[in-house]
Amino acid sequence: MGFRERHRIPDLGVGVGFRLPHYATVLGDKPPMDWFEVISENFMVEGGKPLENLTALSASYRVVPHGVSMSIGGSAPLSPVYLDRLQKVLERIAPPWFSDHLCWGGTASLNAHELLPLPMNAEVVRHVVERIKRVQDRFSVPFALENVSSYMAFQASSMQEFEFVCEVAEKSDSGILFDVNNIYVSYRNHGTDPMAYVDAIPKDRVVQIHLAGHTEKDRYVLDTHAGHVRDEVWDLYRRTIEKLGAVSTLVEWDDDIPEWDVLAAEAGKARALRNDILAKQPSTVTPASEGRA
Amino acid sequence: MKPTALPQIQDFVISAITKTSPLMGQLALAESTRAVTTGNERLTPVEQLDIYREQFWLRHTGALEEDFVSVARLIGADAFHTLCASYIKAHPPQSYTLRDLGDRFAEFVSCTAPYKDDALLCDLCHVEWAFVEAFDAADAAPISAQKIAATPEDAWPNAVLALHPSMRLLTLRYPAHDVRITARTGDETSDAPLVRPPAQDTWLVVFRGPDTLKFIDIERDAFMLLSKLHAGTPLGLACEQTVTELGLSEAAFQAAVGAWFSSWTQWGWVTDLIV
Image (cartoon, rainbow over all chains, first blue to last red):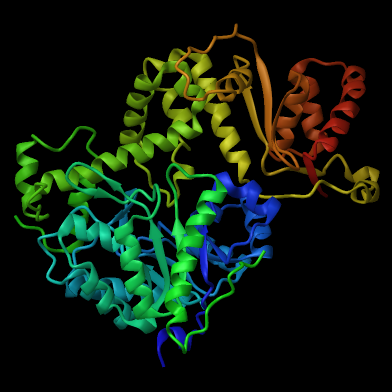
C-alpha cells in the first residue's frame, strides 16, 4: 500500500496560501476556496491575532501548515523549541498532513532564513533520513518535504535532484510536496530535464503540488512567488496531473500579492486545467468545483 | 582543501552569504568557492553563492525595516541599512522566525555610536519593539468581578496581581509613540523627514486590546505602582514603596489609587489575583 493510501491523504482540490492582504476578505466574506495553506512559523506564537485568525480560518476551510524553518538537512540538532511550537499548531488545526522543505537553513549559530540546497549524495541522504525519522516519531500527522529551487550546485553532489528527492522519500517513508515551479526554476538554473523529473516522481508519495510565479533575472531565474504562473510551468503541471492524478494543488503568491479576485482566478485556472485532465481519467474522482466556505 | 562533509560545506556557505559586500572580486574566496560549488556556463561559483548572499541581506534588512518603520524614517534609508548590517553582524539571526530578529535592536542602538546619544531614536526603537511583542503575546481574559468580590479584604495586601501578558511598560524621554504614529500614517516609504518633538518625559504602556494594539501614556505615579506590580511585587508592598519613593501623602495616594485601578481593570490589564 502506498504512502497516500496508507495515510488516507485526501485530495483537497485547489487552494491558495493564506496571506495577510487577504485576511479580511477570507475571514470576513468566506469566499469559495477548496483549501488554504498557512506558513507554520507565522502561527507558532503565544497568542493574539495570529492564533485567532488561524482558528477562524480552520473553522471554515481545510488548512494545511507548511514550514520554512525546520532545517531538516541542517547539521545543527533539530530545535526542540521549534518542534514544540509546531506541535501546538498541528493540535490547533488537525491537518491531514504537514510539510517543510528538503533543504537546510543555517548552522547552530545562525539561521539564514533561507531554503538552502543540499549537496546530493548518499551521505546526505542518510543524514536527512535519520532526521526525518525523528520528526515522524514526534508527530502522528503525515510529513512531507518539498523539493526546493536552487541557484547553486555542489561539487559534493553525486546524484540528480530527482534521484535525491525520491531516495530521501523512500528511505524515510515520507511524503513529497512536489513544487512544479521549483522544478522549472532548477531546469533554467542548472539545465536539469523537468519532464524527466516529473516522470521519475513516485505517484503514491506526492501529497501536494505547488504552483507559483518566478522572476527572470539576467542570467538566472529567481523563485519569487511573484506574478502569474508561467506557461512553461502550466505545461509541467499538466504533465504532473496526467501522471499523478488527483493531488491537492496550491497556488503560492508571496510577492507583489494581488487582489483576492486575481489570486482566486489563478486557483480557478489550475482547477479548470486539473479537472479537464482528471475528466479524461475515468477512474478518478474530481473534487467539487466550488470550494468549502 | 575541498570540503566534502556536510557541516564543513554548510559552515562555508554561511560564512560566505553573511558577508556584507559582494563576493565577486574576493580572490581567496573565489578559489575556495570553486572547491564547493560548480558554477555553470552563465554563472561562476562565486556568482551563484552571491545570489544567496544578496537575498540574505535583503530579507533581514527588510524584516527590520517592517518592524522599525519610524526608526528608518527618522535616520533615512541609507543610514538605516548600514545600522541594520552592523546589528546583524553583532547579533546574527538565531531564531527560527524573523519575528525575533529585532529583539536586541533597541539595546544595540542604545550602545552604538552615533545613535546611542540620540534619545528619541533609542525611545523609538523601544516603542516599535514593544508593539511587535504585544502583537502575539499570550492571551489572558480580564479578571472577573466575582473573583474580585470573592477575595477577602485581609488577603489583598499580600496578593500579587497578574497583568495582561501583552503589556509593555516604557519610560521614555520623548513622546516617541506620537512619532511612530506619524511615521506609520500615510506613505510609510516617504523620504520626508520626521519632525522631532521636544523632549518630554513619558510613561507609556503598550498592550493588546480586544481588537487592536493600543498604547496609553499614563501619569508617572501610576506608572511607578504599575511597574512594581508588573514585576510581581505584592500589592501592599508595592503601594508602600510607591508612597515612600514618590514622597506622597497617604491621603493623596489613597485618593488616586482607586481611579488607577478602575482604569486598569477597564482596559483589561488585570487578569488575575494570586493570593
